[in-house]
Amino acid sequence: MLKTHSCGELRVKHVGEEVTLAGWVNRRRDMGGVIFIDLRDRDGKTQVVINSGHTPEGFALAEQVRSEYVLQIKGVVSKRPKGLENPNLKTGEIEVLVDEIVILNPSKTPPFRIDRDEAVDESLRLKYRYLDLRRGKMQRNLTIRHKAIKFIRDFLDERGFLEVETPILFKSTPEGARDYLVPSRVHPGKFYALPQSPQQLKQLLMVAGYERYFQIARCFRDEDLRADRQPEFTQLDLEMSFVERDDILDLIEELMIGMVQTASLVPLATEPFPRLSYRDVIERFGTDRPDLRYGMELTEISDIVADSAFRVFAENVAAGNPVKAICAPGCGSYSRKQVNELEAIAKEAGAKGLAWLAIHPETEEIRGPIVKFFKVEQLMAITERLGAGPGDLILISSDTRRVVNEVLGALRDEMARRLGFKDIKELSFCWVVDFPLFEEDMEDGHWAPSHHMFTAPKRADIPLLDTAPGQVLSEQYDLVCNGFEVAGGSIRIWERPLQRKIMELIGFSWEEAEEQFGHMLEAFEYGAPPHGGIAPGIDRLVALMAGEPNIREVMAFPKTAQATDLMSDSPSEVAQKQLDELHIAVVLSEKEE
Ligand code: ASP
Image (cartoon, rainbow, N blue to C red; front, side, top):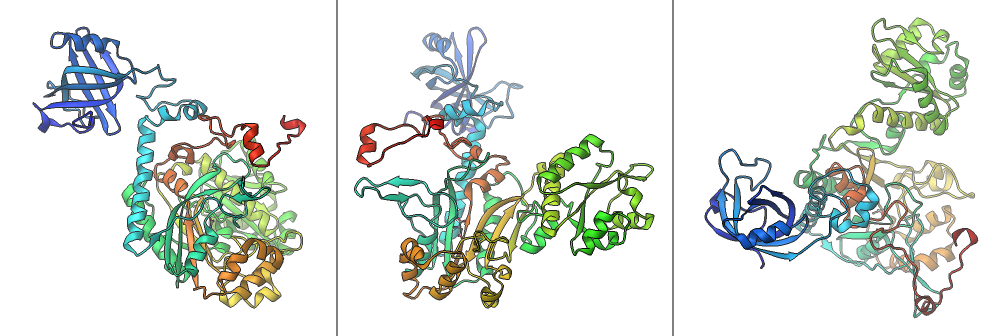
């Protein structure tokens, strides 16, 4: 080794010892005759002191040294003089008096400062990711990631799980996104697909009798560009045989709690995690990814406004639709302009307009364009039901149930952002269960699975597949944290006739099914056990635990929102010879050229 200790290791007990350290120059201070260098490695920083009187050659070298030079120093650990200790540094009570210094490698001036976690343009950070990764915050984030994954592996190993790797070159998988395709050289015109998840393979491992499988699996989805999506991401992929829904929920909940306790900077809000039905969360929060760090629940007031003089409400209720509201605390003095902004958000979510009531903070007088249509008792009943008080703002939506929930869900989100509720530093998990098996709307006369086509319907609902498929509930479950879906899974269909029926309902012809999943359908004829699984998203969970808003902050080498790698400049063109070997001709449309 080129060093005897790390730069974060030395303490008062080492005083008097001769040591060798190696690392990067974090900062250098020339005090005339004495040069102080903070030498940094992944473990920490140590102050080293080069005295011109003690080592003239060393001092001459130290004068040339700049930020990010790589040095090796030999010296003696010494206690810092009284009053000069640095309590912010693990090694802050000591320094190393240098006898000898070697410049192992110089460095160009970095494009941004490594020694400070100051804001730097993200594209510059991504282009020089290897320098960005030297910075404290990134090292901290990758350490959290490592600890989380290590915890997962140990936890599952103790419970009899086997980690099995599955292929990256595989066939199209059914998560519903576009596949990344890899052309085959040896089979002209044929392609592999990169797995969107190991879904089929983990189910086949259950048929194979493995019973408890997991994998820290890389998944690939060519989805439309969104700010915080990555074309490749990591899941804890897990599958179990002979289990029921709650077995998986209990196991994953215990795993999550342990992982947060081991690795997270942000504490857990509550345990056990609430288990809420899909219907319930849609009605209360307007989304199936509810952020439970704050209230502002959607509250129905249809009965109160049904016979009001405000015709829009009265007629809507008479038609069987709801009127619902949320209360934004402390926003009662919102200006016209601010309310108009909210109305624009409501319209974007599908509303025709937005009704509101504002309660004056002192006089408690209620204002708003619709106030005149209501009797005092009706206004009192509304404020009471919403728990609204002086200074609060009530936002009201009236439309079909679906639109009302969507609109108020969007407004709840917006108000939470404006009120700072999104900055609450805790992890608020919940389970969402009892999803409908199919999406609400049919596509081209067929039902679309709300999870994927291997998700089982609830046993009791199987007869409804023939009469009212839209009402069938499934064995799907999602884990949600702070408004993000952090895991999704289900108990699977394991009998071939049922699988066939679901495929028919989603408009997958038997021939198509045979072609894409023939191997799976066949496998199900060889004694497939009842099974189910789940796949928590590692990147999002680590980002939440690190208090980072963006998953790029917890990935070593992420791509941009445009799916490019700025460091290696990929994707990039390839040599004609490579294309020829792959039997590929590239034809660009005029726009793309
Ligand atoms: N493969 C699914 C997904 O990635 C999760 C699962 O059903 O286990 O969403």
